[in-house]
Image (cartoon, rainbow, N blue to C red; front, side):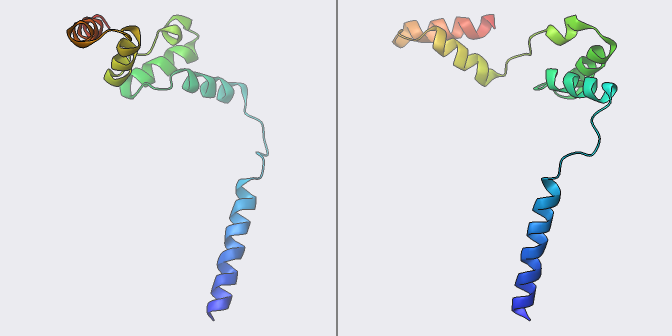
Length: 103
């Protein structure tokens, strides 16, 4: 009984893997492709920002899609640390602080 369960489970795993690897039967329509491109361009945005960016992109507004994404605090800290590499102590702290306020 256990052997048949193991064999059935293995068959199910292989069948699902083969099904998942099957290529799509139809190519994307032009509007579906445009939606995919706009969605990819708005990657990293969330909520209303994402919806507005995708909506603008779908309407053909290129200025909204080209606007740089707002950096997260971790990204700002990383960028400021790289800009001030080589500085030490209080000089480093004050330079990074000023950089964080500027971004």
